[in-house]
Image (cartoon, rainbow, N blue to C red):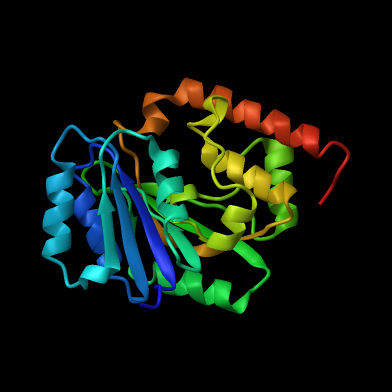
Length: 248
C-alpha cells in the first residue's frame, strides 16, 4: 500500500471533552491524502472511548488511522514515537484540544510542495477558551529564517506556533527528532526549532489563521508555567552559545 502524503500526529492525555471535535476537524479537511496517528498517553478519563467512537463513526477508511496507547510517555515522547513509525513525507502536528480549520492542510502542503527548500511551515491562530468562545488571536509574523533567527536570539521567543506546524519527516529525522532530555522535556518544541535553525533548516509562517488554539486550564502551558520558563532559558542559552557571533 502507498503511504499517505501526510501523517497527522495527535498525542492525547485526558482530553475527553475536546478530542472528538479535534479529530473531526482533521476528518473534515479539504485535503484528504493523510493518515491520523493517535497515542492515548495514559489517560485516566474517557479519552479512549471518545477517540474510538469518533474513528469508528467517521468516514475514514481503516487504513487512514493508527491508534495506540498503553502508558504515559509525555507529549513529545509520544509524538516522537508516532513520527518515527510513520512513512509519510509530511508530518502535521495537532494537539488533542485544538481545532484545524478546513483548509489548513491544503494550504500548508501546497506551500511546502511549491517551496522545496522550506522544512517547516506554521500559521497564525484563533485563540479559544474551554467552551469554544473566541478570546483573541495568536500571530507569528516571522516569515523568513533571518526573522526567525533574530526572534530566538534577540527576544528569546518561540518563532512558530507548535500545534500549527507541518514539516518534512526526513528533516525531522536528520536533526535527531525531539531531544527528550530531562532539562527541556516540556519545551521540546522550542528546542527542535533552535536545533533546526542551527542545522540551516528553513521555516515559514503563513500569514493566515489556520487553527483554533485552545487555552486549556489543564494543559501543560498553564500547569507547569514556571518550569517551562526555566527549561526555555536552558535551550535559549544553548542556542546563543552555539551561535555566538553569528548573524543570519
